[in-house]
Amino acid sequence: MDRYAGAFEEAVDGTRQQERHYQLLSALQSLVKELPSSFQQRLSYTTLSDLALALLDGTVFEILQGLLEIQHLTEKSLYNQRLRLQNQHRVLRQALHQKHQEAQQACRPHNLPMLQAAEQREQEAVEHRIREEQRAMDQKIILELERKAADQQSTLEKAGVAGFYVTTNPQELTLQMNLLELIRKLQQRGCQAGKAAL
Image (cartoon, rainbow, N blue to C red; front, side):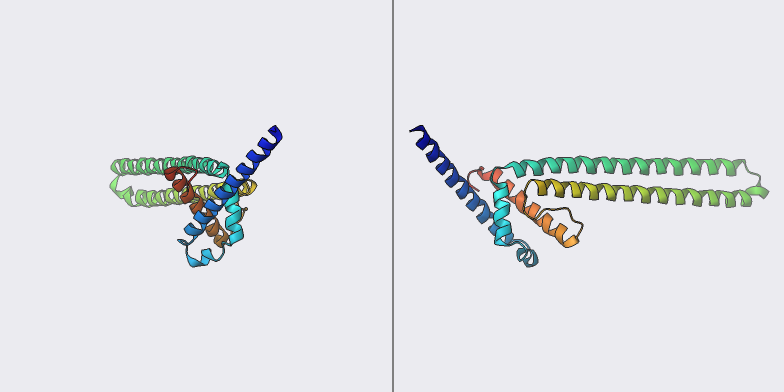
């Protein structure tokens, strides 16, 4: 008798999962209509069905939330690093300006043109250094963000989320961003209306 009860519960669970899959798929199909037509065409029924299957147990929503938190922390850290560099440059410029003012005040009038020329060269060298440091910082930020994006793509691919794999192709990245937006909208609907009824 217990064997039959267990089989019955499995059948009910399977039916519930199938209903949930259909609800997710239906919601995804509805949301896809909001995307530009060029992306609608790239999201086949199979892709949407596979995405709905990946979303069934809610794990992907949790993974996305974790990835989003990591991304925000990374962006905040990189932003703060850039701010620190800008502040260092501001302090450097102020110190150089102060040094030049003091030197000009102490300078004899007949030596002033030579001093000003030397200060101009020093100012140009400092500005060149600042530009190079800013460029290097910006490149570091871009590389770090690209690395994070690849990590996110890999994580979602390993989680079985349809459409995700490591790529730098702009069209594929845009498609993946659209998929993330669909998942985010589904998550919002689920949070507002309860997980059972999307």
